[in-house]
Length: 363
Image 1 (cartoon, rainbow, N blue to C red):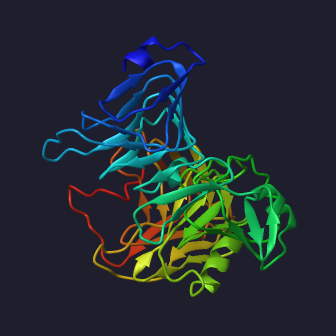
Image 2 (spheres, rainbow, N blue to C red):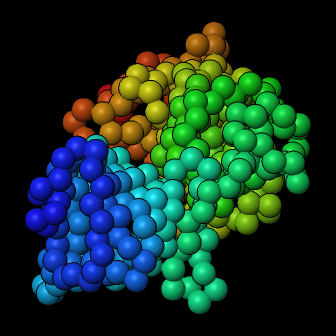
């Protein structure tokens, strides 16, 4: 700790012998831990607390330690700033890394007792060792593959993909994506791709891309109807895991759409925009009939704080939004609002109308 306190921005601090102490860093520095050297924490909730810009490198070990009260968790690296992990073995029975939502952690090297996938840098993968003790991080020369052809960016793979081909997104990435295909594209998620993608459509975990999240795939399309049809047709390929459809732009139905159900769990459509309009346009948007222990799932979910308008612009006013259990879920949040401007909303199957569960309310 004394060496860290004495360092200036730009310095590299070398740890050359074992020590048991939990340390704090608030400067812009590099901490190099020599091979064979171990830094063991004596405060259970951090071995290293970073409040500045810290780079961790070397071949040594950082281990969570200290006396842990019942119900609490060990943390090796607690980041409250910007942290780059380029090396070292990070060991913790609970969290190898913990960060606040507004902070930034990038992992491009090292070994971890828990998966570092949420923090992987561009082009990196985390592979579990054969003995399942560690996840080893390495950087590859490509981001994605189509068959055996490698691409150095997801955008390059999207540009090259042909209809009915699959993109295997191997590594993390942080690209701005232009989805420029008029057909549905399936992107296989292998668990390493937690980078940030900003595009024209929707959100998937840390990704921003219109998609269905099914099994270990992200299925992207310009047309919501085509997206639903593709997922319905390919349920067997997606191994029957229930998922969600996410839409970013306002949606005007072009035909009747039935959302598939998988393994007795329904798909739902989640809205992304702060103000979202669903135009039924004389068609039916409904879910395939299913009754399960939850009594079904909504067709439309208005995310927290979103303003959703449902209308039917057709002259005949025959559009219908139909849900299982309930058709619209607006959560219990006073800032969320669903307005039925015109058209019909109905439900079928079991409906929970208890005072404690008022989902499906429409203003």
